[in-house]
Amino acid sequence: MRLRIAIAASAVLTALIGSAGVAATAHAGPRSDLAAVVRQLLITRSKASPLPAPEPQVNIAGRTTSTWGFGTAVLVAPKVAGAYPEGWLFIAYRDRAGWTAALEGERAFADLASRSPILSSEERKVFGVDRTRAEALDRRTGLRLPYANGQTWTLTGGPHPMSTSVRSSIDLSGGDGKVLSARAGLAYTMCSSNKGWIRVVHDRGWATDYYHLEGNLKVSGKRIGDGVFLGNIGNDVSCGGSSTGAHVHFSLRYKNKYVAINGHAVGKWVIRQTAKSYEGYALHGSERADVGDGLYNYGRLGFRQGIVDTDGGGSSIHRAGPGTSYAAVGESADGDTLDIVCSARGETHTGRDGVKTNLWSKLKDGSYVSDAFLWTGRSDPVNGWCP
Image (cartoon, rainbow, N blue to C red; front, top):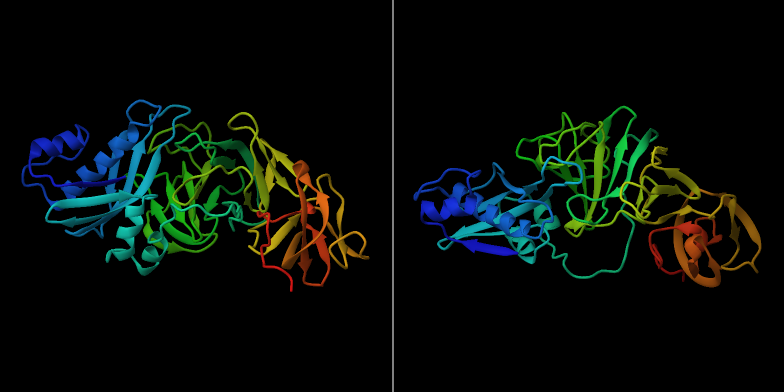
């Protein structure tokens, strides 16, 4: 949704902002006008919310000028169980007619971001891409779990929502309590209190959210690396919702919106949802961790790697060619990580969930492994076809 409004009178401005908004007069400055326009965007969005009247919250970044605006926009949820806030970055431009503002996920956002002088060159590169177009399914996130590699934390909540009905999130707790970035990217604090909620925007269209944090960073576009401290697990509900025990509510976003975390790999665990929210489990090969079990952080899965999944344990046999008629030349244990050189068609095999494939991955030593027993996140080659 793209909104363009010129505000010239306090009555109109007050109507847009509402009683909880910033007081304004007929001579309101550009920042006040901008807040009103973005609030109206949020009010329009809230009409689709199943929960009662979420509170619009606009947080204007300090780099905003008289002609360009940037910040975060949040629909604050009621502080009750089952309620979740929803938030976006926004970009805006002001000319004689007034402010034109757009939220993440809109084509206008990409257009404005690509030419805004108040964004960094990296922000223009990341946000200036129109990601509304359809793309082939690719579940390779390149994410680690949001805590130190080698630590084991508890999966306290299986796939459940963050704002929408999509089960984009899991709850994690334990270890040293230090929440770390799941991958490098641009970090933003979402709530106006500068507490609780951080979003990290990665490359390739991915982003991750971290909610309920305490002692978190206060950032607005800072470039952070993989594994950087974001905050401690906590019970903060500055943007609404509820928390009944210190944890991080970890959410997955793709192409500027929440996506089901089901079937995606994080820390070399493939997250799986079941019938009800907060239930579910995670798979590392054939190793299964249910809610209440520990998740060892194996680190990120590379985009040209696969996790051996024999669907029951044991080993996957390496062959001299793409089929069982070729000699066995080695094996890999269930859960091993393999580097893939290229892919070839061969003998069809059936893997987990009854999925059949004739794709085989060639490894660095020249041997082949059936993709029926290898999780890569794609149904086609992750490193091109073999010559």
